[in-house]
Every structure is written in C-alpha cells, then in structure tokens.
Image (cartoon, rainbow, N blue to C red; front, side, top):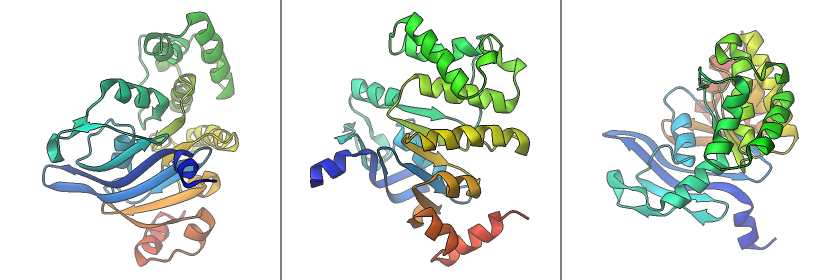
Length: 262
C-alpha cells in the first residue's frame, strides 16, 4: 500500500489537537486515527478529555490547534486560537452527516414515534426518498432488536430500548463512521447489556467506530485499538490484549485497578 493510500484508509485522523475552555486546557496535543473497519476505544478517568476529543472529531466542538482529517480531506479553518472555526459550511455539513454520533442521553424527540425519529434526519437533512428511508429505518430497528416498537413513542420504551433506537437513527444516516459517547453509562446493568450486544454486533460487521466508554470489558471485546487518555494527553495506547493484559504505565495500572469489577 502506498503512503497516500495508507493515509486515506483512515476515516478519521486527528493530529496535535488542542482544546481549551478559557484557561482550562482539556486536550494538550492529541493524535488518533480510526482506520476503515476498525473500532477505536477511548478510555480514561472523568475529565481526561475523552468526550471532548470525540466532539472535536465530529466538529461539534471547535478546537484551537491541530488538524482534523476526514477520509483524507483536512478540515478548512478560519481564524486562529480561540477564534478558530470551520471555514467551509458545506464541508462541515458533509463531515457531520457522515459521522453519526450516539450520545449518553438518547436525545429522541418525544413527540415523534420511534420510526419517525429514525427517519427524520435522512429525509430532512439528506433529502432522501421517504419511502426508501422508511424501508431502511424499519430494517435498522429490526437490526437493533426493536422492530416491534416502530410506532411507539420514546416515553413508552425502556432506557435500553431508547438507546437502541438512537443507534438505529445513527445507522439510518448510513455514515462512514459511528461515534459513541458513553452509550451505556445512563443504563442499569441489565439494560446496558442490550446495548452492548448491539455494539458488539456492529463491530463484528466491520463498521468504523470510535467509542468512549467506561466499560473496560466492552472496550477489550470490540476494539482493534485502545487509547488511554490522562489529563488531556495520550498516556498509553495499543492493542487491547496488550493494553489490558500488560499495561506499561503506572497511571494505566492504577486506572484499571480502580475500574476492575469488585
């Protein structure tokens, strides 16, 4: 594979990313890449910068320095430092619609049925044919195991079912990559396993995913690459078997000891 081909095989690349909120520096020069068909998990303590990094990758947050590259195409910026913003609105929309995000909170529209929730963005944002989108949406609801809930409203579903609906909604955009921000942390253990099962199935399909998670077992099971963030920097990263089985840094050993099941 040529160097150019190797670069463009990454769906997302981030180089030397810096992000601050006023005087609080959250990301201090981070580099990550998510190759096509791979799952990259971000782990670390609360406040380490995991969710911020994910939101910067999806351009939901503006970073002050560094490169964000989507399928070989660098994001165009205007301004510098705290005034830096994406400089090409068409590019911004294209990237966001190709990077579907699943949040910790389900963010479903309460006044719409589950089917309507899943269909809304492909129809209104992508301008796809409504009948075709409905067929796809029902297929994705079947995929995540709640096809029988298509006509229900969010309040009628359990938390696990709502999160699976949110995953179906993300899939219906037919994105190049899925970004998960603590998708199971708002759920009790029984409902959490419903969502974990879906994420594992998506990983087995070879979907490109970046996953922020507190669930070390999930990260170990589905990831091709794990990144441990500590105070806004990458402390350690690598193959999950090596990272979890033989951590090289004291920080990671402490973190894994603290997060190990009782």
